[in-house]
Amino acid sequence: MFLQFLEIFTLVFGLLYVWLQIRQSNWMWPVDILCCAAAAVTFYAGRLWANFGLNVYYILMAFWGIYAWLRDSRKVDDGELHLNAPTKLVLIISILVTLIGGFALIQALRALGDPAPVMDGIIGILGVVGCWWLANSYIENWLIWMIADTLTLILCLTQGLYWMAGLYAVYVLAAVNGFLHWRKLGKYV
Image 1: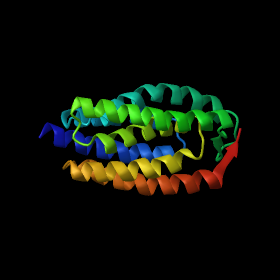
Image 2: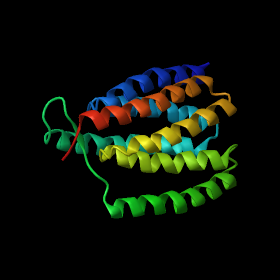
Image 3: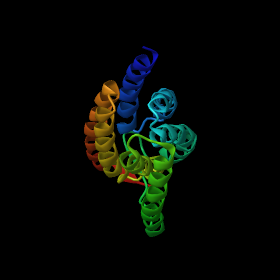
Image 4: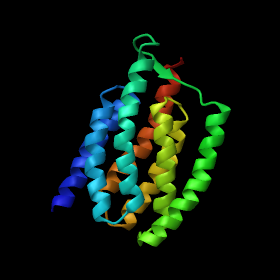
């Protein structure tokens, strides 16, 4: 019963979070912390270790996000969204982290008895890179989220986490909307 409450809590705060995220509101970060804390407990209870760890990582990244977004929001006019372009070095590091980190994470999850180590590992590493790109206001973060959220939706369905699956279905649609919204109103700083 408590875990179902946490799933519903995560759903409600997750919807608020993604609405704030699309609008690039700095309030998304505190909401993210609450949402991710509840999600972390839910995934921990389901022994989905990468998604558990990923939500802990999201909580930590929220503090960087608060700093970076407050800094960059001062560089644009009202109604504009601040964007940064990833450098070639960021792209290379992101690819290496995804490939090497993903392989290592899958192996670790297998050793820990994760019920879905490959799916959980891929989602986990995409989330690490996607969150870093989000915190740095790279518009391409939305493309990563489209893939990661679709995979998480499937994972939640296979693990019986139906409220969480509903949240991730909305996240997939929100990622498409977020990409279009940022492309329309974004300004590179």
